[in-house]
Structures are given as structure tokens and as C-alpha cells.
Picture (cartoon, rainbow, N blue to C red):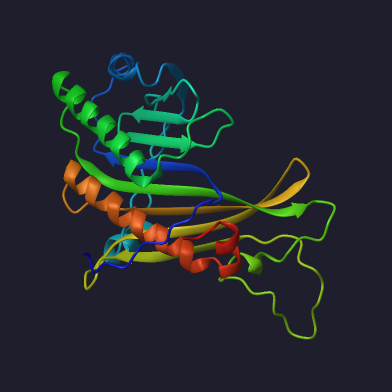
Length: 273
């Protein structure tokens, strides 16, 4: 029997979208390559859309981070290859490909597949990654060399009707407090929170960061909070094994963060097991 602590588990989490994302050294894409890659996954993702490419991201530490903040070089506008979306027939899954990125999204839709949990999501991502590696090798685009890995969870928390006084966000988040001094008692209408934490394995230097963003919004007469948790960092090795190891680590840290920053009352509503 494992001595590892049991990870938090929720029967009805407020999850609406999950993204697995790998960034790698740019491949030699031309306009024909997204269509050729589509032929390898058309059975799983029959619909196609084109979107602007995502810009590169990188978590830096120490002197590298200082240099990046002090010196910024701006090039002129560059015409880049678009980002291709390949969408499953039920609209729940999106495989995204560009010259330096591979992403897999699951999103909550009315008729779409239920969230397959982390292992199911990662298994599908592993298939896409393997097919991209095979495609890059067969078309002489160069090796897939990962440099940043990212996993993001989006959740929507309903506060109540716009026309009503809704509960304070502290009912859901331990990071917030509804206790004020005697000088101020006006009801809170909305709040936005941004926080970041270092990600590091036990006894090791930082390998990434975990970002927490809470944003208020309104939809269909209701007030809601969007909780976005993003863990990003570099793989220990620039290969598929490094990608898998970082995703596993980031998933565990993100899940523990979600449980740690939310309240027991919220856990009850989301059926923590």
C-alpha cells in the first residue's frame, strides 16, 4: 500500500474547462503541414478552425528573470502560421497545433462528453503528442523538443442573482476575508484576485509557478466567479517522458492548491470525498 497522501477528490467540482499545453522549439511548418497533420487525427477531430497563434511563454528565475525584465527587444511585425483547431464531433475536445505548440482542451458542453478525469485527459494528450512526433519525423520538420509545459483548470462558481445580495467570496475562498474594521461595513459587490506560487520538488530549486486568478463576471442574470489555476514550468528532460512527469506533478500541485485555497463549505457543495 502506498504511503503517499490521498489527493483531494470532488464528486461535483465546478469545472468547465481543462487545458494541457506543451510548448516546444519551433518546427519548420509551412501552410500545408496543419492539413497534413489533420489527416492523422480526422477520425477523432473532424471539424477544423483557424485562429491566431499563441505567443511563447517561459517561466524564468534568478538572474535570467532579472535580465528579461530589464531588457526587452521588440522586433517588427512577423507574419506567423495560424493556430489550427481540430474539434471533436460533440464539441467537447479541441486539439490545437501551431509551429511551437500542441494543446488539448476539454470544455463543458450541453451534449459533449463528460470530463474524463486527469488520467483520461492525459492519455488522449499522449496520443496527440506521439502522433505529432511521428508526423514531424516523417516530414523532416525536426524533432519535438519541449521547453515549457502547462496545465490549466477553469471553474465557474455561482454566487447568485444579480438582483440579490450575494454571499461574500470568503464563503468559497480561504484567501479572502469578509472581516473589516468598524469603519467599513458596505456590502461587497465584486472582487478580483491574482496570486502566484513557486512550484518546486522537495529540496529542489523552483521549476515553475502556479497562478491563481479569480475574476467576477455576470451571465444570464447571475453573478459568478471564474477561478483559473495554471501550473507552468520546464520539463526535467526535453522529451515525452519529461512532459508526462511535469504534467503529473503539475496536476497534483494544482489539485492540492484548489483544495487548499477553497473552504470546507465549498467542499461540501462540491461533494469532496
